[in-house]
Image (cartoon, rainbow, N blue to C red; front, side, top):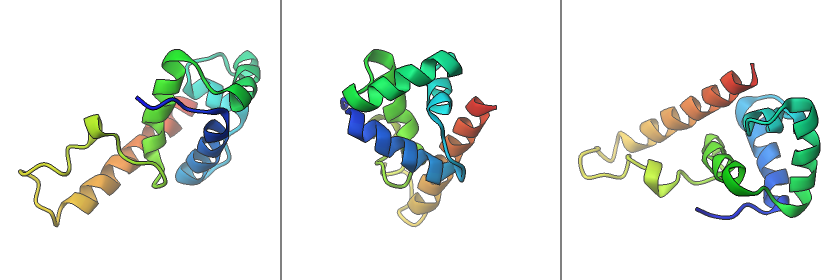
Length: 109
C-alpha cells in the first residue's frame, strides 16, 4: 500500500470535503482515523507535515477512494473483471464511490 505524505494528506482532506459536500476539519479527519476528535486534531495537523503513520495511513488510502481524484485500489476493484459487462462498469464504480462517501458521512455522525 502506498505511503501518504503530509502534502497528500492535506490534499486528501480537501478531496474528501468535496466528495461528501462539506468541509472537513482536522477533528473530522481524526474521527475518520479512529482518534478522539479534539486531541486527534493535533495529531492530524502534525501528520499534515510529516505524513500519517501505520494503520491510519492505510485507512486514509482506502477512504480516499470516495473521491473521484483517487483511484479505486486494485484489491477493491471488482469492476474490471471478465464477468462484469463493460457497459456496467462506470455505474458500478460510481455506486462504489457513493457507498464510500456514505461510509465517511456515517463515521462523522
